[in-house]
Length: 399
Image (cartoon, rainbow, N blue to C red; front, side):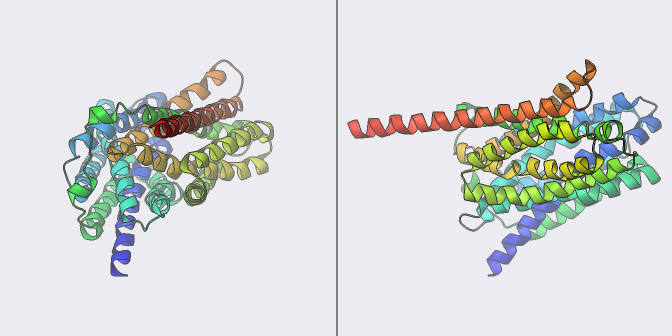
């Protein structure tokens, strides 16, 4: 009983870290105007700080996971959170475009490794068959950040100074450091040490297929989410302050979807759960095109899309861990890079029809196409797996 209680505390420590990461990743979107005005740059230039963070995640995930593979998980998570706390706090002290751009890049570097290593640790802390629920507890910190942390951080940044938003992130980082130090058990390095080299791990073709699935499939959600503000104000005709309400609804949906996704991963195989989620997302995004002019239905669908989007997170993370035998932390961390690549690519591709004058609602159509493409990749992976099983079975029978 005592061991179960300590494991719950350890998962809560991971959730606090996830809360801080979710806060720093998304709060910048709410204070872009304040940042641009303070630094004397345009809002599109301020948007580069979002891209710099995402680039840090992509670079840092495999790099830090590889470098820290010989350290104990507790020590590695602690060091990652020190990095996170230091550079997010320093971001609040930035005085110019170049310095903040560089600090945002550095702030993003521990993101993927923390979630990647944390996901593997969570499965080891969980009771047998409850690995998906344990991962969802860690991700709950990120989803709750969208409901509570980001609105608070945005308010403080708008009322006082955008720097205060980053100081808040630094404070959460200190809480995560303390909780990891006090509550995370000392898992021996032999229990989690990567059994293959980084080079060998990167030769896993199914791993790369799952990375592509994450990038393309989740890009469908980000294609919609990146343009939700003009969808609400320009298409539905709602006042600007409704954008904040919509973001909170989407965040609440993410909280619900996160735990629903864990249940789906237990009821079905992780990959089948992803296929169900992305198929529903495709249909809902198409529906969103036709009801976007109705403000009431649009707000309802904002919650629904937020929920569906996070039913994917835990199952795809489980699928990556199951596929990356011997290099679980590498694969798990790379998946976080893929989420951020999906963020960037989804926003870019959804912006193309808008740039060509087709209107905001067509961003949802792009999102539906990306989600459907993710379904196709997942189905292809299952078909190839089945063929391999049949081939091995025949070889075994012939022997």
